[in-house]
Image (cartoon, rainbow, N blue to C red; front, top):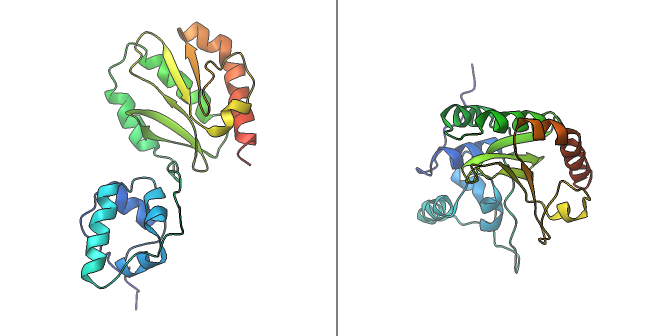
Length: 199
């Protein structure tokens, strides 16, 4: 007799939130009693609306989230699985004068480490290492390639490629394909140094 997978009893919270929960092994409302609201909100794809809908559905069944610790606020993590399919689709539909350059830089970043995942964040390709955000394209800039390194450890990485003196982020720019080739080795070094600081 084959065992059928138990169907989810989640209300309509949207595909990204449902996928995120299923990826973590949650398919039933009663399982969510093991999580606090802060822990649930930390999952990539689970936004405030999904949390509110789940909370109301749980309340209707006499269930509730685990009590949060005083002052508990967890930072949002990157997608635990690479969403290359979503990024590929995004790139096919991208209308940007430097699309080929974006694709080249994307390939360089992905090639640095097998544990780098990609997804779409801020309406642009974004990359994380085991859930820790590393860098995201800023595609509002159409005259050059603009990368935003938004990881708290980036301030410890020393490179002429990194611009800005922000607390937890740095910027990198490429003018064209030739500039990318010139700076490729340094970009790889910056990413490798940043990844080392995550371990």
